Amino acid sequence: MAVLVTGGAGYIGSHMVLALLDAGHEEVVVLDDLSTGFEWALPPEVKLVVGDVADQALVTATVRQHRIDAVAHFAARIVVPDSVTDPLGYYLANTVKTRALIEAAVRAGVRHVIFSSTAAVYGEPETVPVPEDLATHPINPYGRSKLMSEWMIRDAAAAHGFSYVILRYFNVAGADPRGRSGQSTPNATHLIKVATQAALGQRTHLEVFGTDYPTPDGSCLRDYIQVSDLAEAHRVALDHLRGGGESLTLNCGYGRGYSVLEVIDVVKTVSGRDFEVRLSPRRPGDPARIVAGADRIRDTLGWRPKHDDLTGIVGQALAWEDSLSKRNLR
Ligand SMILES: NC(=O)c1ccc[n+]([C@@H]2O[C@H](COP(=O)([O-])OP(=O)(O)OC[C@H]3O[C@@H](n4cnc5c(N)ncnc54)[C@H](O)[C@@H]3O)[C@@H](O)[C@H]2O)c1
Ligand SMILES: O=c1ccn([C@@H]2O[C@H](COP(=O)(O)OP(=O)(O)O[C@H]3O[C@H](CO)[C@H](O)[C@H](O)[C@H]3O)[C@@H](O)[C@H]2O)c(=O)[nH]1
Image 1 (tube, rainbow, N blue to C red):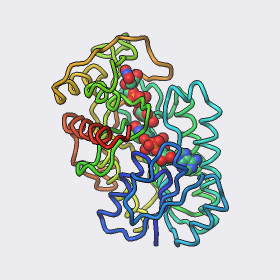
Image 2 (cartoon, rainbow, N blue to C red):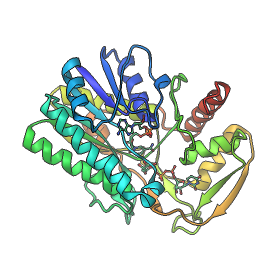
Image 3 (spheres, helix red, strand yellow):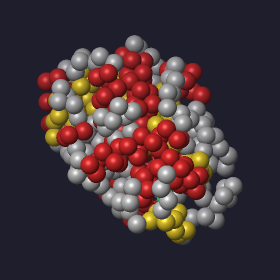
Image 4 (cartoon, rainbow, N blue to C red):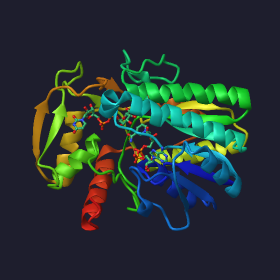
């Protein structure tokens, strides 16, 4: 049986493809419209279908042709502040298109779904770390677009008999330790990527969005999970579902928060470069702090992270950014 990875040419999806191939999975099929992903991010043995996840005829044909039993659904729009200015675009990309994909896939015989959800479903929790059963109160359209997809997947699984693992990622960072993939999005907005670009002289400065939050140093706290550790969580989730395991909703994080200012310090130390940091107003849609309650995924899937170290994560991000510019890919 084969796995369909939607958004597999993107940052996190391409690392799941590598995790599957490294573990000996023979057939991996990627469905990606290449809106933010890259064909070169995929190893040559992977079959790439270029198209939209909401193209039900294409999904049906792909599932049948490759005898796909499991879909890992990464394809989405992912930038929190963009979702505030373009909510309808986010509900279309993340909610409406997920509905179309799930319907076509399940009708064509898919038995298992792994869904890329987000810590943004929790909104602004009163205390951290946040366990999975905390009530969800997203504070931006991105988080709401993903939470609605979670609801659809649970309801459809109950009605149509497929199993799922919903993975709520905290802040994903770093790159494949062997340098085969990394975050390649042009005009990226993610903190660690932007900070490494500033360290390498590719940006003139870095802005800190808000220094008046109720956190120890006034900047936002986030739980940064390394991308290959996250990809491995998907691989073990797939084995769990194929082995008849029950449906699960799991946080993916390390259970420790770093502030924006702490991250900037680590980037400066690891790179050995100084760069200008401007203290700016808050960015719309940002919660002050979000840190994973990280036990359930260890207890249920036996997942054990290998890269829980911010210095190492920043080192990988710097190496990837450097390799992109040497290959003229940015
Ligand atoms: N990066 C993070 O910190 C983070 C955190 C939490 C959750 N997530 C989730 O992880 C998933 C992957 O994010 P990423 O950081 O790899 O983003 P990315 O932009 O690098 O990857 C998304 C991929 O999906 C493809 N795509 C987008 N819309 C499509 C469509 N309609 N049809 C087919 N392909 C489409 C893009 O071309 C791209 O290859 C997303 O669902 C995102 O919401 C990311
Ligand atoms: O140039 C920058 C970029 C970011 N930040 C700050 O750094 C923190 C992290 O911001 P990111 O843009 O890196 O990530 P987000 O926390 O906004 O969101 C990310 O993690 C979320 C889960 O926590 C979502 O899933 C989302 O898809 C993913 O982009 C925020 O406080 C942000 O304001 C800055 O100060 N300056």
